[in-house]
Amino acid sequence: MKASFENNASALEKICREVIGVSKDAGNFIQQESKKFTLDKIEYKGARDLVSYVDKESEKMIVKRLKEILPEAGFITEEGTESGNNKPLTWVIDPLDGTTNFLHKLPTYSICIALMLNGEILIGVVYEPNLDECFYAWKGGGAFCNDRKIKVSEISLLENSLIVIGFPYSLLDRTEQYLRIFSQLIGKTHGVRRLGSAAVDLCYVACGRFEAYFEYNLNIWDIAAGILIVQEAGGKVCDFKGGNNYLYGSELLATGSIQDPMLEVIQEYWK
Image (cartoon, rainbow, N blue to C red):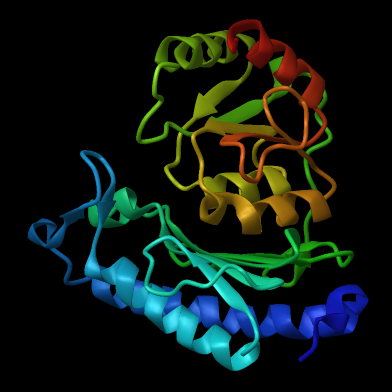
């Protein structure tokens, strides 16, 4: 299939629905492996950056299937089982977002697949197998969860909001600033949650369960699919300056109707 499908909504929807099937098959594999996985099978990419054979096998399964859908596309993959991101069409894959949760049998993790054309996100699919919820969007087509159209929250006041936050593996030298933002939001909102899967966090903003999500030191495979889903659900995505450097810039804020008050809190401490 040629890249001319960029502005062809029906073609994008067809590909998106094929990707949904891929993500659900990967989710079924992960759930089956969860029943027999033990902590002695954990591998370490870093002190707190964990991985397992489940991540890698899920990624291989996804890559194989996506090659059948679009043979001409390249890949950006978290586990590096496939490479080649110098092509106009690129799949961006996190085969198990929330690995630490999975390893400890905490039921919040997901499979994330995005398709990009020359840096623009065209399709995003996030499947959370524990609740059997598949969030997805294609450019210009709206956002959905299990075939139900979703939209972001209309709440515009921080004091009525519930916020979700991520804590990355490393805050580098920004720990104190980050914790000050966290502390301020606890006092200004209904509460702050931390689920452990950036993709799920974004999708929960997209469907209005949270009013905002922010995190630092993210990778493209964590967020590409979820970004499109938020945007197609009517939400806003920006970096901590309110700009557009969120896909590669490590800073991301996703909101419904409270972008301005969130940025005010973040920018007070994020120098």
